[in-house]
Length: 90
Picture 1 (cartoon, one colour):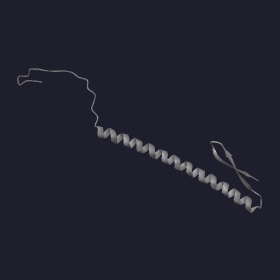
Picture 2 (cartoon, helix red, strand yellow):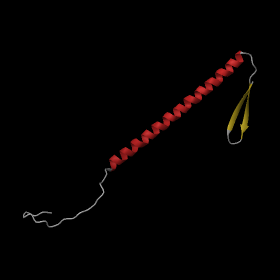
Picture 3 (cartoon, one colour):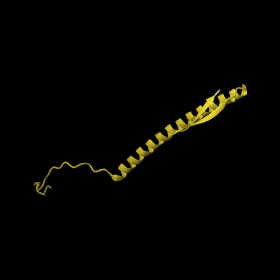
Picture 4 (tube, one colour):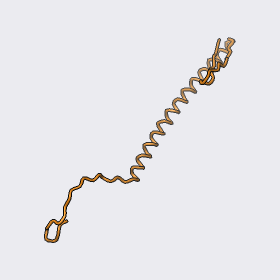
């Protein structure tokens, strides 16, 4: 503090951390979460599309084999802990 006469009556040096606005920090955090969620959704959509394409190609193959009058039998093989596996034998 400097008086009218120019005399310094008090001085000090401190190394304080800059204070961040909590609203800004929250906003940045939410934006980061939204971007991560969007990226996950895009990956899931790509996987779904890939699975649909594989299913369609399998169905087309079966239809083609049926059109050629080849006997096709589908049997379900149950496996413990893995769900159901389908075996197509020609």
